[in-house]
Amino acid sequence: MSEQFKPNIVAFLCNWCTYAGADLAGTSRIQYPANVKIIRVMCSGRVNPLYVVNALQQGADGVLISGCHPGDCHYMEGNYYARRRLKLLKELLEFTGVDPRRFNMSWVSASEGHKWKEVVEKAVEDAIAAGPFDQFRRRQIGW
Amino acid sequence: MDLDKLRKTAAEVVSRDDVKYLIGWRRGTFGYRVAPHFIEDAAGVDELIFSPLCIANLANYLTLTEKLPVPRGQEADTRKVALLVKGCDSRAVAQLIVEKGIKREDVVVIGMPCPGMIDWKLLAERYPETDVAAEIGWKGEDFLLVRGEEEITIPRAEVLAEKCRLCRHPNPVLSDITIGEAVEPWAVAEDSGVAEIEAKETAERWDYWEEQFSKCIRCYSCRNACPLCYCEDCILDRLDPIWVNRAVNFSENTAFHLARAFHLAGRCVECGECERVCPVGIPLGKLNRKLARTVREEYGFEPGLDPEAEPFQASFKPDDPEEFIL
Image 1 (spheres, rainbow over the protein chains, first blue to last red):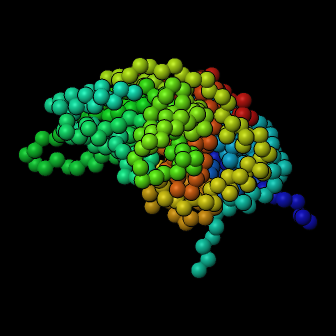
Image 2: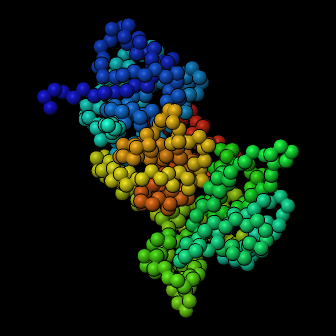
Image 3: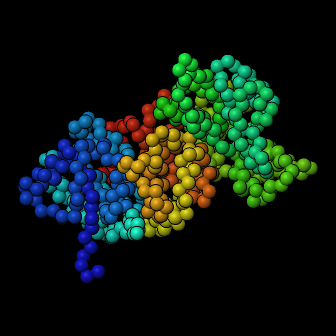
């Protein structure tokens, strides 16, 4: 490869913490890799695990899910459910042979702009190490 | 197994005014096949059997029953359904009650401690099916095949179904009537099928499942046979949004199998129906057992043991494991 591989990372961020945290990173002029495509959801508990499967099918090389720290959820307990669910999804993806580095989850609060930067750097680094993920691409029907 | 006692109890149960019908097993049309048997009156109990071939989980029929609208001026039929269950089937019933898929008062559970079932495909490999009607029963630890003049003792390890080899709950976890003596749970070895895959490299695992999922013809038998896949509005049938495309190719098949396995995470009672009915032989049980093991070992939860429990994915503990979170 002449050019370095630029991974495509889809990030599902909770509206109340991580999205605000990413916003803070922006307004604070913190430099972080531009490989993440952010999708704002109301809560990390709103992330249906099939979103992750779908993102991987549609060309994402990695998926990042981030929400409030446990106990800080705007809806009291959404992130606790997300934690259980996504742990199982992670196990399932790993078992079926998806590189575990393609799936990252983090807690980033609205004041943690710097942590957001570190999380993104880690996710990008992981996705580069895992390489492009073409095997699972949705096949285009050409007619 | 005391068949007379089973038939007598069944006859008593179906004669009750508050019981609509009883679901059990009867001999199939050929060879080792066994079919579900719906008994509406005491005359039907003569065909009822319970043998090591009664591997099918009948709990599925509780939610499969069509609920037609009640015509005006008529009362809804609120009678109960009686069901014969083994250990694993009773867990499915308990899990259905947990999820409010059925009501406890709507079923009469007739529990039968299960000494282990035969995988009839393994049996047919060793002793091909013939026109002569075969009787199969338990004989101590092993199985006894009686076919005309022949009497063959088959060692347990040779034909025991995989799910039974890994079974930890052979006795019904809930029952209104129990027939037969409780059996001693047997020692369960490590799940070699799952461990084998876990031992592989990530890329090798992907290749393994690629080979398996590519075989899938998307008949959805696994979903239909599963006692716990009973959503009226299944994501696989939805057109808006289309969660999983209908095209039969590797990508969509994988998405489908991930979705199916995930929807059973923390719910699967390991009755093995999905794998048993799969026409192309995808080892779906491994996916389910892997997740069931994670839930059991890391969260200390086993579905279908307590009808009063909270559903796994709809509950949480503040100290759930989170070492994977950055």
